[in-house]
Image (cartoon, rainbow, N blue to C red; front, side, top):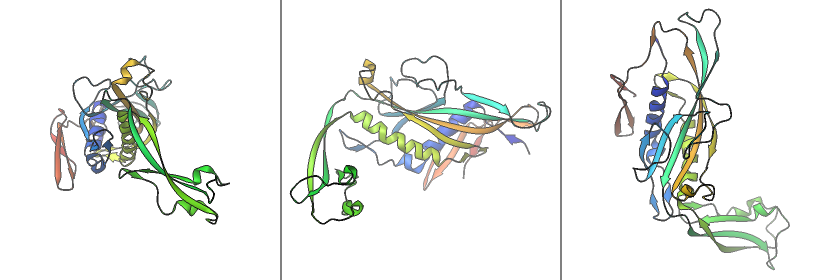
Length: 282
């Protein structure tokens, strides 16, 4: 039976399909602060950089690299390159059974173009105080809990559960106005969602690999770094995959897929990859 091993192009495109068809990516329950509307990924790309055409949230997947970066690109990962190989099997490298351990580093980039950079968000929070309004002699983080309307409500009746005793305490509700960047708030939520979705991808039929999310970076958090960061907002999730790459061309089958069909619940999606016959994922 022929081994099925992806080219870098096929791996990038298959990763896009796996993310786009993930049920939580399709129903993210993440909201843009200014409009309070659920924000879904509006377009997908296999290359990085600023998005100049499409509106909305754009997700790109592409190989990481170690060369000099241009503006709008992720920082080089030290000496990391797109793929690193090391010997895995003994014997002749021309043997059909010979393989290398190949470590691929992919970048999942989230981009959102938005001119709004300073909005006021009012946060409410519970705080435990002494009866006379003074601070408790316990670690401060155990005495406060944040409210944020329906999208985040950490405050519960269990706020006191971390306290050794509630005797002589009172709960007060207070508010605090915070200036936020709506696009950056959105990307911070989405980067965590992408991380969890990638953790859920333990293989992409017919490929097998092990993987790990290595890092998340928010380079446009401070717009004083580059003036473009006022408008172009980007976050990076770095995903590392390990596969076993064949060393001989004989009897190796590079999957000629031109579309992949994925099903999530009652919905079916077909993504054209331009690689040949159709391959269906049950």
